[in-house]
Length: 400
Image (cartoon, rainbow, N blue to C red; front, side):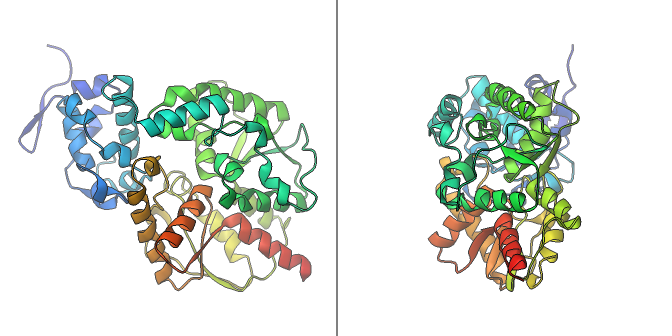
């Protein structure tokens, strides 16, 4: 007899062979205590049909047909709160993503229509909106004098991302960032239509094989600029370049430094390349999941915010590693807008409790989700991106 031995957990026999054969960390899943920490940490658990821990048991029992009928894994925002808090160290969020891959790859379930449509748009138009990809710089049309002709080569390449490029409510992010970099004397460039969707939405949807062409194209486009540093204002694009692309491409250059905008602007602030003037405002800072819980970037944004004279930063009840998700991740909006709205509402109420006027984040999807959440739930709180506040401070610094 071959394979892993039968183990017993809470009186239920678990055969870990199936989970292992499907690429899961079967041994780790088998250590699940069934404590429910993942459920209590989940921003959309209230909408799920079964708790995540029940899926681990079903995987261990090889109950693939039963798994295929669930909605739980489609409601995961991939926020990583469950992983951070799991007492057994199970990579809960990643395992949930792999369950999505399992049901699609093995034909247990046809990819839900919203995801199939998203995949078609991204692969055909190279962006999440299905628009002409050559219009990626449309956000610059409102800038005085525009942005001119971008350099073909530069020391820094700024990867803008789909949301900021195509969603009007997020245009202020690239409009702010381009002015910050320009005034700081940074040798940078933007790829415009040569930039394709990073593929993160497809990766989280369980369609990881679909991002290979996107990854290869983007890497070659960046190499053509000669840049040694890639900066992204999108937390998800940053995570993709930092961790996912190196896994997909063995020739990913080791000397390409990948930074989020908060890291890069903290570096500029420390070198005093940006002059920060006073902004009299009470704010609270929301740690984006892909930036914070996935990458441990908590100090850099706070370092910059605390260097702005007049800013009073009030932390929410849950912050840094314990930050609550805004609800905007994992493509959940395509399946349950109500679940996303409820998660957003819960986080916004925490922000409101601080007495802050603004909730500041460093993720274009967070800003978009908070903007919609505040409007739908009539919460008197303004959403703002980190780059917007930095630019406002620089404007005031120039006047001073």
